[in-house]
Length: 128
Image 1 (cartoon, one colour):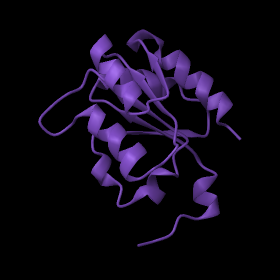
Image 2: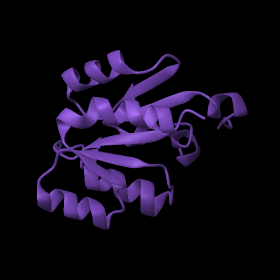
Image 3: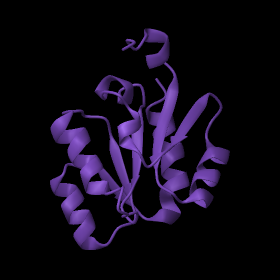
């Protein structure tokens, strides 16, 4: 297993956990120069928590629920299994889904039409 480097940690990267291609395309087009987005629905692609720490924040789609993807499982793995405090911003979701995400320690909740604006806001705040 390779260790993250300081140079890798200084890169401006975010994760978009959704299968919404149109939303990913819009976010990718709006990203400030120097920022990278990883679009995935597979948290297991990270071998361990240190790889996830290379990303400044995560946007998690609460509307996406399949046999292989449960947003609540993602939150539980990040917060309880890996015990990470990486910001997780949720989009969409019914009130019950959002309430469960709150209990699983999600940070903020947004409607889908706010996501591009919020990503830009957070790129500015996490652009250190």
